[in-house]
Length: 547
Image (cartoon, rainbow, N blue to C red; front, side, top):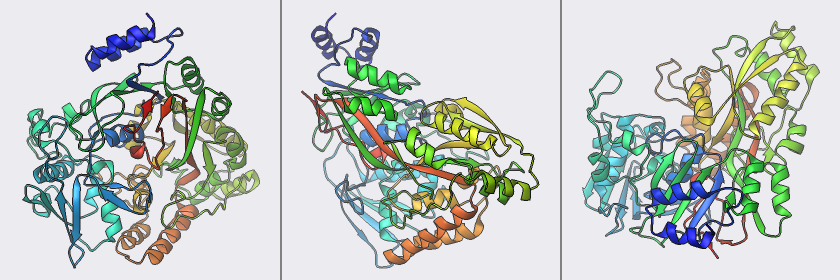
């Protein structure tokens, strides 16, 4: 069956049936994707849930960023500012504690239900009461399951009052609202799918707030809505015709799970996909040389790091932490594994954010590392494992690190797994070491400072599961400094506080930050309007069209 006939049939099928036909007919002879459908090759095996009150993965952020609206959204023309989304305007009280938002009138969710202040209040209450990983973002404002209904209120159908516990820097509060956790949900639709649960000590509410249903569905008002998600296969989005902004140019978007860079490039060249999202340096260079393709790159607020679980007695030794920072061959990794897709960077704040530094105090030095290991009483080395997502360049970096550690007598066992497997184990603090990435949840330095330095409860039962908590690191002095930075309204002074925090983590933190991501993509020259944002939830697909 040739493509024009397939495209004709796809238009008359439901989205679910259309994608089934699409994948059934995809193959070496598949000449072109449908004219009304954007197909992206993308490694999406990190997706665990599509519920914005639960999801905390980079791929999911892109899906929710295109299917949910927010009160305010990052201004991509000036990332130091936010702009209105469903909010029409907002004010801040003189004491800096109460934010009042006026909503745009006559907006609708994808379901057709009207968007009201009650939906905004419900979305925040649901986030806090479910108390899953993203809840800590709004929990920073002093919100709890017991006080959220008093702190977040609907004044009238189009007015929301939001009270925080301290006079934080206004930019910090607004930036948090631009995060995925700030998604506004359709209360009526969500609660129609809610399940009754038995309250317990761990979960004291009698409803799941629609969490089970929202794992694979959406209840938003963004330019697209979720049609289906099949783990390790595809996510399918369909245009939301109720969207209040400019309508998406494509009828549907398919994120097709493809792990291998070479496979993505071949599929792009054959016309099986429109965009290749996870290209390694060699494949990106080849795509750049292809006259039928276009390429793009953009710095991301994402850093790649290796972390050392402080529950491991060997990894908790300060000398071992420092030694491992000298056992990364930064130059070799920069020249080969991340060439064109990353830039060597050793601090936890990515370039471009307030207070970021570009200090690089560590170089590959086996002699110095051996001396440090000897001081730790480990002159003969030791054996340790590292959980590693089996995608590139992560696997390549892990293998390179395995070789350089061996030069100092440390035997590294690499434990491969898909994104879901490695993340689940990491979040349970069951790892020795972990190599992964952290993307800022919102464009404010606190997003990274909070997760790398804050750990209010280091017990296994701790509720605030930051990266510091995941690695059982308890830097109470840094936690206090991070909180103080939130109250500093002078930008220059606030930047200096984050610079100090980064240098302290560089010196003693159990994180070996290796590089900052430069996201790249290759795409068909038939596409127009394809861009990459500074974060995954700002990779917006609504403006993309196809000739």
